Image 1 (cartoon, helix red, strand yellow):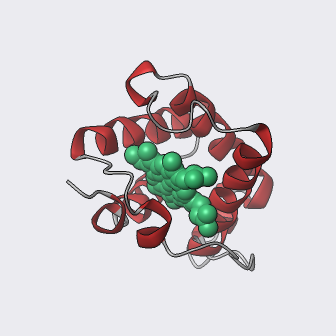
Image 2 (image 1 turned 60 degrees about the vertical axis):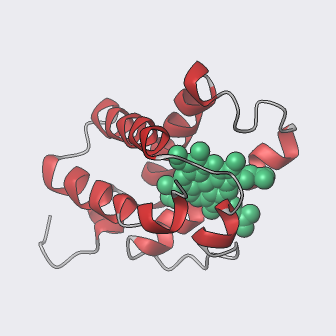
Length: 124
Ligand code: HEM
């Protein structure tokens, strides 16, 4: 893999990122500590959020995907996501990366990309 390739390409493109996002969202949705988020969300809304999260990460990692959702701050405003919930989410992403054997360099870069959103998503 050439070092000049985007993170998106090095991870394996859209479907590879989709698999990571699906695993992440699945483990997040079934974590009892995260029950207050969307346990009542209907299937259409879940699908929409999954698609937007996938597109966000695809675009942010250098893919040609056009993200059509809201910015991270308004998307999470009022949810009062706290730092320990953030840590739980980061751990789930890390486990998803490990499950799909994403190499260390790409894992570190994706985790850094996501953690860079903390200031926009965590409210307290
Ligand atoms: C503790 C971590 C997080 C929690 C608890 C959380 C929870 C949520 C919830 C409850 C919604 C609104 C769902 C709805 O009303 O239909 C949402 C929307 C969204 N989240 Fe998160 N989120 C977290 C982290 C992230 C991260 C790290 C990303 C990006 C990689 C992300 C991307 C999105 C996107 C794209 C949307 C939809 C925006 C739109 O509707 O336009 N979230 N999130």
